[in-house]
Image 1 (cartoon, helix red, strand yellow):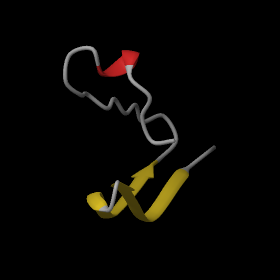
Image 2: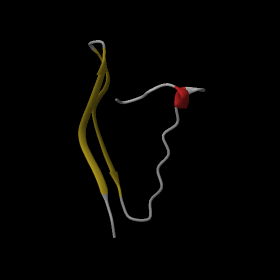
Image 3: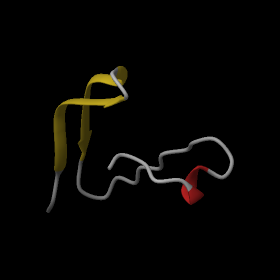
Image 4: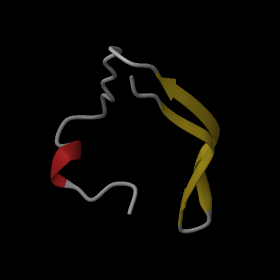
Length: 47
């Protein structure tokens, strides 16, 4: 069994905080999808 756990995730772009203290837990056999705006995959994200 595997678990992915992320705690207190933050991200900012040019001083603007866009992700503020996110917690995420994905347990064994769970499936997670992150959906963004159209063409988001063609731009760098979360570098």
